[in-house]
Length: 497
Image 1 (cartoon, helix red, strand yellow):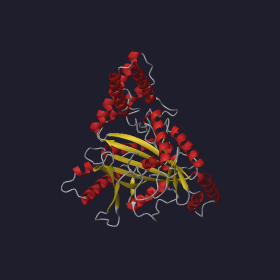
Image 2 (cartoon, rainbow, N blue to C red; image 1 turned 90 degrees about the horizontal axis):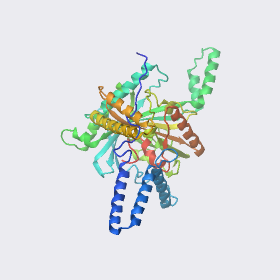
Image 3 (tube, rainbow, N blue to C red; image 1 turned 120 degrees about the horizontal axis):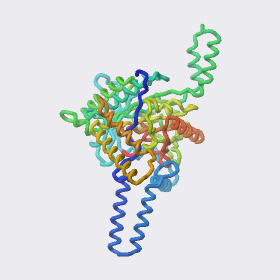
Image 4 (cartoon, one colour; image 1 turned 135 degrees about the vertical axis):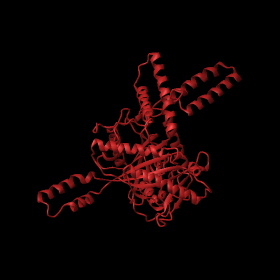
């Protein structure tokens, strides 16, 4: 039927799967190290006290590693964040977490800001950021990022057919970019939401009124402008493309000097923007070094306009602010006043377990009242079809084994395993379709306010809006909001490289 609403199962995962029933790699390594040390101590001492002590400590460590806090996060992880926060604060002795200088913030690490102007547009350079692989310490295994602004459709309420079509086009966009032939492994879509000043909105609405319109209509328009002025928002959307350097250079024939790499990056970005345009999003501009620096500066200090380039010469100028990290926020000493920021992420097990439509996230983007300064960023890690199929198959195998084991033990299911199995089956089914690949979606939200009480209220509004969209909880980056700011910048990064 033409009016039937298309539904989606997100990500194919509702929880962490592993061979040892949710035990992560770090927990497994820790358990192995503890077991080896304990056995060596037991062999060396042959003491009953060592035997009993090892059993007690092992049981206590296992319990703590599995313990959850009041909001469902790992208690051990929360304790680590709290301890790191207090240790870092004592070491700083009242100094800020970051102060502008020669180096960028530690979480950003080493980057190279490049500018490439194609021969056809020598006065319009494109900003390319080369990120070092901080795990291996190698530039060659790092990645490149480039950012462009896309024109929002501003379509409001749409018929179901139009919503389904938009969702299908976006699916094809991600599936095409996830092809093993295209050197792109991540696409970030960030929407910046800013309140519009009531006076500016009233003036805009007044200019729309034709002088010859009936007096009753003019009065109605003025009343409408007054009612809507306090909740009117402006939306700006940006896309950041992440390109693995090794994958890019493998496709280059001949010498791979800096000029050739920039040329190839420009061609890849052109292919991406072509596909984005085909998916229904119009390209507004590719950001150059100064525009990208101005965007980063604006995200730190919303008083600085997105289009203002004064004081911005390079991308690094976007971090030219003192930053303080507190338990539930990061404070930026802005040019005119301080700004307070808080960052949250939707945990894997908090995504809607039921099927949703293509606009399920609109509650976070357009339905936060009163108007709140925020950035909603959807990060899509692109997975080629063959690898996505293997991941879904292994996940379904684990879930099936878990369900059968619980059934044999007579345990009552919570429904989580069955929901996970349904998601995996849906992914395997979808991967049979053309131009479909895998994605690992991550959604983050940053809220900003010039006052702590306003930030607290903004956090409550974001939680309420997320619950309206079917999200069960948000994981706020408490004790590390300063570092978490990086995840909402146009860098296609997490806190760690």
